[in-house]
Length: 114
Figure 1 (cartoon, rainbow, N blue to C red):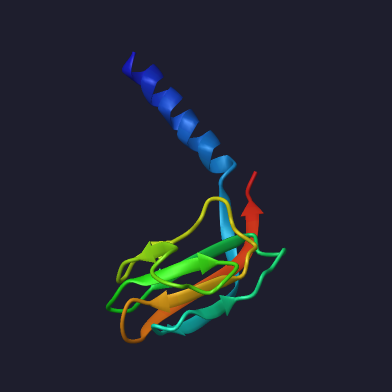
Figure 2 (figure 1 turned 180 degrees about the horizontal axis):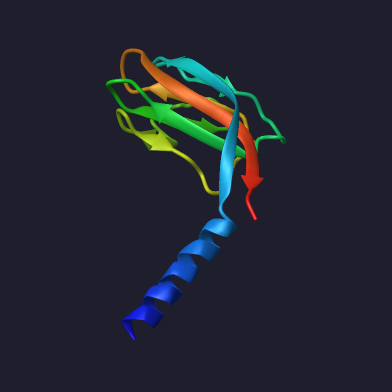
């Protein structure tokens, strides 16, 4: 019975990996986020994957389509990252909670391995 369970588990892991999608980074940008909301990425219908990483010491806020009026949007804690499962093609604005924080933004294409 243990051999059958092991075999079935191995098959599930193997088949899950066969259809796994991976992001191939095309552009990487180091963005300096300040307390003033700024456009970090323009709208892009070709954006298929996105990774945003806060390398700074304070929270940063990620918002779509228009600049921040407060602290709205997705909050990235220091050393935190965000990789959406449904990638937005909207313009992306970023601001820091205080001071200046470095944010790495990576965009790319999606590769599906079969």
